[in-house]
Image 1 (cartoon, rainbow, N blue to C red):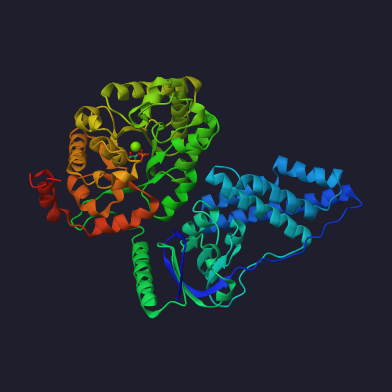
Image 2 (cartoon, rainbow, N blue to C red; image 1 turned 180 degrees about the vertical axis):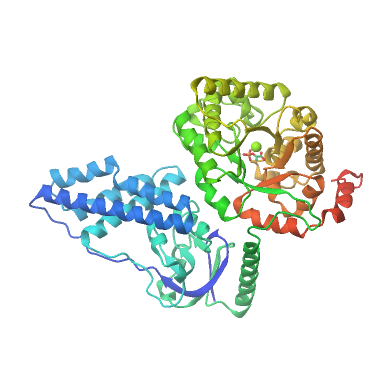
Length: 559
Ligand code: PEP
Ligand code: MG
């Protein structure tokens, strides 16, 4: 057996013959053209054809892997007609008389090198995209058909680094898993593999040799192990793992459409956390009941300057419309601490997690807040919206934020712009202060969403970014759980609903505790919806409530 270690980027175990991806090859010759205008037209025709093909691929990807995958090909379309890219090609053809395929190959390589040397990992990964686009145009110029898998049986596909367009064009029924020598976790091949649910391992370097072609391999996309010619022990171990995963997945899929209801009839909402409008596909695919947390700051993080009201409106409207009446809770801007944005030009702070962040920035810079609130209220006409404010510590902050909402509504009325009169206003409970005065806060909001990531950090005085704190950062600490209980009781006393949107919401060890406490909602990553639903449906709350609540409040709980 040969064991190869790579980096697992899409979980699952796959077994089958190894097959190396074959690219259609064409020889690029270099020559000087007689008719430069005709050569330029030849390029323009190939470019138009490439854009058309990419449009078709975008539609195929949308059906097979959702909007995010489709967007990738839409980006490729934009790259194919990027002005800098096109002008560089134009210069070499019209001014120097070089032939189109040689020029596109060179310019593609030049742009790819430029991306590859950038510091930012995301931009680095775009080198593969620009090469992919150029390869497509060259392929069209040379009349080459795309490569693929020439095998009758499904295979584990090996390659140097599959381009996204290569990945999406592959016949999925022939692919058991991916192994690439290069690549990165944020490459689109990894993203597509995860979205399609195919196990994938990247970065195996030169350990995978073409002479292994046709030999049996088992890959584990969780641990990043590739076993070539696996021995009996490895085979038994990994195949057992695979069987368990498949069984689990089939069972989980059967839970789609089923209620999140315990054996004794207690219901809880299971919503999803998202960071981008394109994540809605995963919410729907995993049967999420709605969106419990849309981290709106990612819109700001993706822009080079303050996103305009219209830009934000379109993004919020898309999420609300795509969810078709299901509830969507959008959190107002939460930057500061670990999420810094250059164009905000914030002064450097010694302790940014305790500094100017989230709602504090919005209240100090009302023009930014107002723009976001206007976009949110305008979007509210297109679905069921909840707005929530992060990092609250005092009643006055919430009152001031609500006053801003009133002002925005009055402006929209005056301008004759439609908005829903059914928008819920809530806050995140992320600070011990907010938890302790939650009895007062509950009287002025419609809902609470407990951000356990920050609530744990601030309650235990443990930096959530610091991996070295290890056992000191314990989100199961009774101080955190007791605060969750207190907040839930106070919310219910005053008619507000309460959920958890921090990572703890998906922690299956605590599901019984959360049900016993009586939380109304848990908002988790889309992939966690069905496992959580399963756990809820296995629970009999009346059997465990008393014991769990006694444990939580008892002296014996001395952690
Ligand atoms: C939290 O703090 O638990 C939360 C959901 O917000 P974020 O992780 O974005 O700070
Ligand atoms: Mg938080």
